[in-house]
Length: 387
Image (cartoon, rainbow, N blue to C red; front, side, top):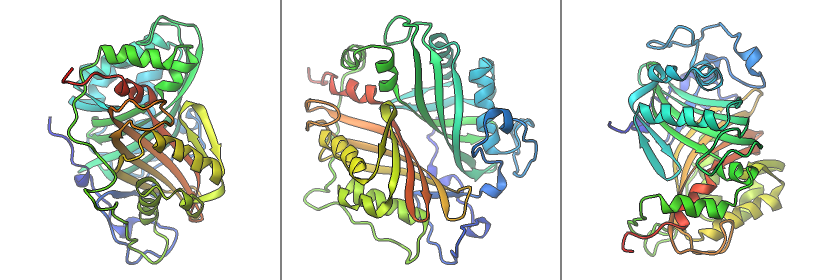
């Protein structure tokens, strides 16, 4: 199956967007996409009891089941029907036969993989509840919709997992799934689940779990050494495209300065002083100093790694001057430093991550960062192809 080109997922015309401010000369960029929340029943603070009662259709949904009134409704309701009501057969009408699922550093192909993994997860956590926290979206029913769905799963480990036998312990874990959706079917998905938090809650040793997974994984190959520098050139400095605040500009500037340039002193320029970052393993990091510390520890493990932003999706928030933003990113580099992921292994590592941001009054006030820490550890224990 041909991989979907994100650049062809429609970017709405600026005239259709309510930016809560004057944006007469917005410069659209190839990584930034916008969705107009006037077209959908946003999830907001509603739980499923309230949200499922929405029947008002605001958005064209040609090719979709009539039960779905807009793209946010599609994501929330099909998630509940398939994975909470155990309607796994609906996967056949909601995923493309040749769907691609990107999970951590691995890719999985075909609808049967989706079905198999879903049933196995339900066996492991048969009472699992999936609490939808946010859906950030863009696109339309002609070209394709793009969604970023953040949820919190809660369940009891009553069946065996890939980590070991059933423990009977309760676990909660955050998941973000980015999807390309066309005509009622998910064509491509980027799935990040906090497996490290699951392993710790079930009482397993994450290092031993990662070693076991590495033994049964394909060997590691490397295509060069990804670094933040380009040869002898320093990282490229992002040039803002607007003199006023524009949300896409703001996000690209922030990732360039803080993540690519490692200018952690700029945290105070982009985050409110009371900002909270919800990090993997259910950690809440509050305030400038602690957010700087989180980033330093992460990049200490991969000090020269390259950061690639793949997509930024922006929706207006509930209030004036508020934005909900989804950022899909990759970190590629060598595990060569002592940091979050322990002693350096010298192995190449790629992290697929998705971040949600709540921006209010031109500052980040809340952030959710999700990636698969077990997959990162697994890569540090992989054998090289030459061994």
